[in-house]
Image 1 (cartoon, helix red, strand yellow):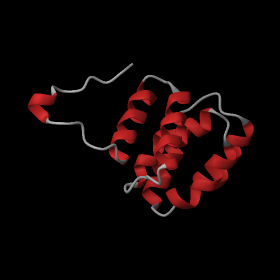
Image 2 (cartoon, one colour):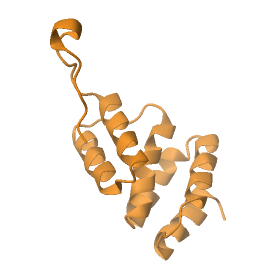
Image 3 (cartoon, helix red, strand yellow):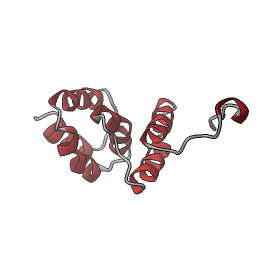
Image 4 (tube, helix red, strand yellow):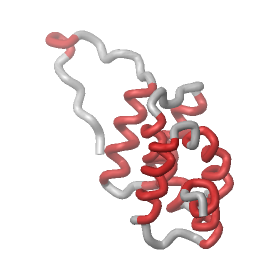
Length: 116
């Protein structure tokens, strides 16, 4: 699904694509359950050196890594997300609601995100 651009004559040219642009696109893809699209959008943003300023904005990407079985990437990001214990707890809760995760992903989630 493509986003519609507002009329140029009213709003001017589209602004450059910063972190918020990619985060909003990834969140929209997450709402549709399009995890592959979330991963693609994330790589586009990360390749440009963009990343969240608010740690909760990692969630669409963490969820996509979990669904895709990318346990190593989840483990790599655990210290980043873990910088805020509240966000780490939120991640643990969200992962707890997800089904069909691989054993390797569940092990990373339990040990690094949920502290078990």
